[in-house]
Amino acid sequence: MDSIRSSLEHFMDNSAWKQRYAKLKQEVLAYPRVQEFLQEYPEWTNEDTKTHMMKLFEFKRERENCDACPGLADCPNMMQGYQPQLKMEKGQPLVTYHPCRLKQQADERKKQQSLIKSLYIPKEILEATFDDIEQDHASRLSASNQCLQFALQAAPGEDAKGLYLHGKFGVGKTYMMGAVANELAERSISSMMVYVPDFFREMKQALSDGSVQEKIDKVKAVDVLILDDIGAETTSAWVRDDVLGVILQYRLMEKLPTLYTSNYDYEELETHLAYSQKGGIEQMKAKRIMERIKHLTTPIFIDGKNRREM
Ligand code: ADP
Ligand code: MG
Image 1 (cartoon, helix red, strand yellow):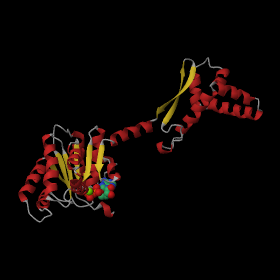
Image 2 (cartoon, rainbow, N blue to C red):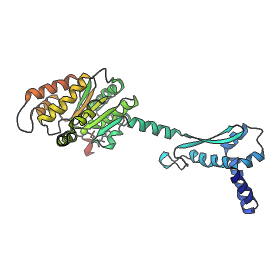
Image 3 (cartoon, rainbow, N blue to C red):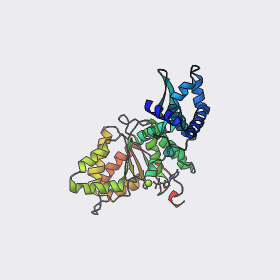
Image 4 (cartoon, rainbow, N blue to C red):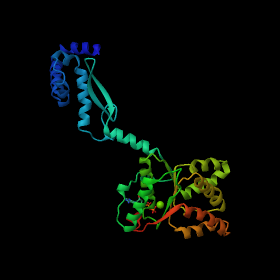
């Protein structure tokens, strides 16, 4: 600091600089937050102002940015999202930096987002919240109430009961699950949203590189598993029994809830699961899986217009 000060004094000889300095000093001392600070120290002298000009100036420059906050993304402060605070320590003014309110909120949100994992789910869905869900249809109102209730009460490890959200393409089923995931994150409950057709395709590919078990393990143990668009995939007996069946069995034993979205209701999904790609009909196996799904979910029908055509 001393070197800054002596070089300051050196420049003081220069009258243009003198003028600028005087103006700067005036502005700094006129800044209400500096005034507020100085009022607490009646013993503060003109000499102190001179000595600590750089500190006061730094504080003013950064804090003024906060006064006219343009939002976190455009924060012009030296350290984005950090707000300066002026305080006295051992008789010396000191500028310290703290994450501002917006930065704190963003950090909290990031922490929460890290609780939500996803496979093949669009980003907009992961940002959905219950506040955004339009209650434009009675069934949507009822569905979002039930989903919210689940999110507020879910107790993974104690209760495996989940939801089965079904209805036509585009009514907002996946979106609502995004809102559930976010609400769960608020309660520090982690979730994983998986787009089933792509996941099953990946699993079939995993057969060739030997990573099936590892991939199943990643999905099966999450607090809340969201299987999005079940029934839209091409099923094979192997995927149904050795992937889905294995995951659901594990979750049943560990009392971990699973949520589904589907264009099919229970019966239609059972029919879908009974047809394997090879053409054989395996009703018994499909029934067994379906019983498990039914037993562990509450069905919710959601109606309304296709939002993708709006
Ligand atoms: P589904 O899963 O039933 O086929 P989606 O959840 O994918 O339907 O929703 C269809 C489209 O409508 C998506 O682009 C989604 O972002 C949007 N959407 C759905 N519900 C809402 C909502 N309540 N508010 C705003 N946009 C929504
Ligand atoms: Mg969907």
